[in-house]
Length: 90
Image 1: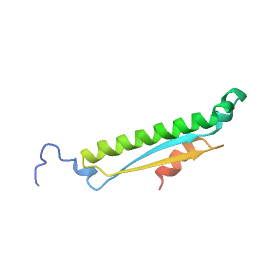
Image 2: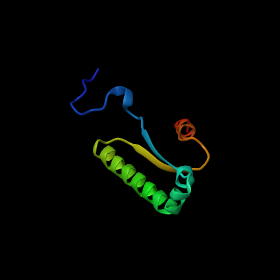
Image 3: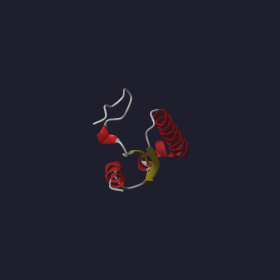
Image 4: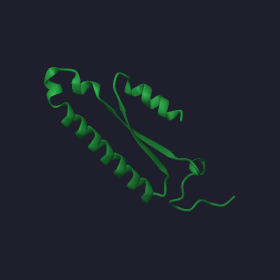
């Protein structure tokens, strides 16, 4: 058996991939009249920041030689947990 070199991934992760997901839930943006006034700005900020997090993660994974699948999902009326479990099954 060949000995692993420093920095080589453990054998159990060779060929695996990481999936990273951000979920933007639109419901809280409309939950109160006060929030609804700023809903579009809030949602855009959530989308932008989520995309930045995904981009940073992709860059970090690439530097480590890892495959990283990323996705932003927008929901209204569903729980984030449901979406995460659904996406994990894909």
